[in-house]
Amino acid sequence: MSFTLCHCAGNMFQPTAKRLAAYARAAARGDVLTFTEASKDHDAIKSLGLSVSTMVELVVAWSPILFDRVDSGGKLVLEGGKAGALGSKGDNRKRGPNRYCLWVVLKEKSTGQKWLIGTYHGPAKPDTGQKWRQPLANLAQKNFAAEIRKAQALHPGAQLVVTGDFNRRRTVNLGLGLTELKTPGTLGSSRYDRIQVDPDVKSSGLTTFATGLDHLAVSVRLSVTGATPTPVPARPEVPMTSTDKLIATAKKYVGVREGRNNDNRFAAKAGFPNHQAWCASFVVAVFKEAGLGSLITTPSPGVDQLAAGFKRAKRWSEYPAIGAVVCFGKPSDLNHTGIVVAYDADTITTVEGNTNDDGSREGNGVYLKKRQRRAANVVGYGYPAFAEGIKSADPSWARKPPVVKPTPRPDLPKPGKPTRKDGDPWPIDGIDLSHHNDGKIDWPKAKAAGVKFVYHKATQDTDFVDNAYAKRRAEVKAQGLPFGAYHYAEPRVGDATRQARKFLSVAKPKAGDLRPMLDLEETGGLSMAALTVWVREFVAEVKRQTGNTPVIYTKFDLTAAPAAYLWTARYSNVNALPHVPKVWADGWTIHQFSNGEFGVPKRCPGIPFPCDLNTLAPGFDLDNITL
Image 1 (cartoon, helix red, strand yellow):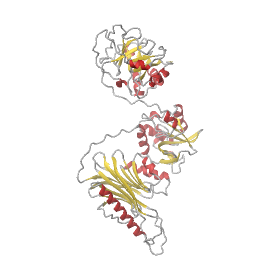
Image 2 (cartoon, rainbow, N blue to C red):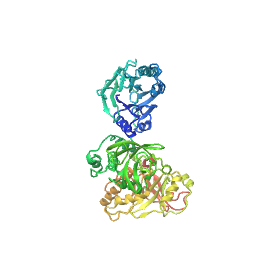
Image 3 (cartoon, helix red, strand yellow):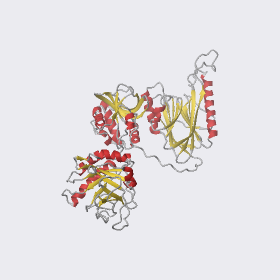
Image 4 (tube, one colour):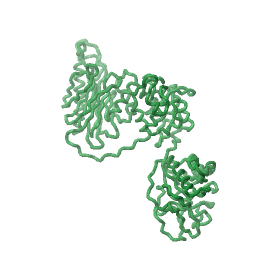
């Protein structure tokens, strides 16, 4: 496997925004990264989606998708802050800050190859007036090499790579048999930052690039040219979540600058006019590019309007969340926005467009910024409805997590044909209820009698909501039984989608619920062809919102079968087999065999009123219709 190594020197005297932007540029290029002068920025580097190991100002970071950490260690290699004892007699100048080294052993997940990555920040180069620095630099370098040799002894066979800021030293010989990769660019007339590798390591694409700080960063593609390691089975990559996609999309634009008069690339992506304040355009464009445009309910170049959509959807909080849209200004005048990529107890890390180093709303580009959570201008956060949920600092949101859109499930094999004779009793597997079924159910008795699932009416047409639905849903959930909602259809040309939307707004299906059910007992005067179109439109809207087709309860011979499981009904004291519409060649999934008056059995223990009793097709499991 080949990977890109990148070394980037920070500068603690530079503004935080500049440092964070530099790290983001490096992370966009590298799979393994080393940083010097980064003591204040460990969390910010980790927020880039990387695993990290740290030693004061030093950081080694790597892609957790490509590598596992095997071992790591760090050490003080030169104590600073004392008088120049190694200098000339009477020289009272200071040695400067402490100097450290850090090493990490990483293992490629795809091949098992190990890499020993060491990094170091050397003391400043001596000049004619500071020759006392030379022995210090030699001592620090010697101590660094000794630490790396210890790591090599612990991990034989690991390929060695050394990086660091060697502070303008003309030659760097660590005595480790390494080859220095010559950089094609320099900063002024001096090279600060070096990469050295084992002779067996093949390099390509060596380059330097600007970070906005006082050093050029260095990157190179590395692979092993010696013996091939024994392959190990590759681990399946974890699919990116919606939040991951959003943050990755936002971060790739860090460093982009606007043209004259607010000219920017994001307005067109968002569908807004150019040459105006574009922080909201940046947010909307990023969501759209990540395939998440529908999560911005009121896309607008104005921040107030952007926030209003989250507020109306009751997805607004004073607490940060990963992937949230943060809004700045005053409650009555929101004037700037960005995307939260990390937070801790005191700060938020954001990607913002139309800003600058000092954080003002009128800026010149896209920046990775670190802000105080409780700053007066941080008004609140809009929470996108990510499919996987959202990680939030809001304690009330933690107690009441957002509704998670069920993950689409592939349709599983169809049920088998029942093998039975008329008159045989049907087992009770489930019941379906509505507001007509009034009374208190003894659930332990009902479950003992075989009840494994419950469906309940939620809506009818576009204007009726079953007043027993919410209470029964909570009651059934408390019993640990699978629960599903159904809609009683009153078909009319052109209103299938409207009925489906009304139904889902009341039913609120969640992961773990049973698939929604369409109760189709009336034609509304439509022909079978027109009714088939109506059903197809209803099914399409349910699938669009939930990712799954509904179950359909019907007796009608539609002209084409939607991709949905069939629920049939036939009430008979001899339990005759139900009619199966011709287009459902695979047969039925659920059969309603009793309405409480006919059927064997016709009543269920624990239920004091007549209700519909149902059985599952032989070999059919409820997991097949579970969201």
